[in-house]
Image (tube, rainbow, N blue to C red):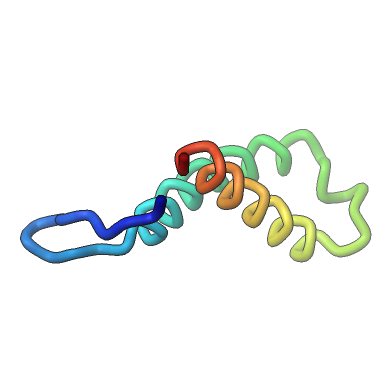
Amino acid sequence: MLREIALFDALVPSLLLYFVASIALFVVVDRVLQRLGFYRLTWHPSLARFGLFLFVFATFVFATSS
């Protein structure tokens, strides 16, 4: 279940923490794919990046929620 987490005496939605963690993992995976030349094979590179971010974010949320 998604809850609020106390962070420095402020309640923060857990989705915000998932979002920040997803950005960190996305940057790493994006750089690896960019070095491999994956985005040259896609029709719309920015749309592929957006889909990759959504995949990483959804995986974080679904894997950690019970």
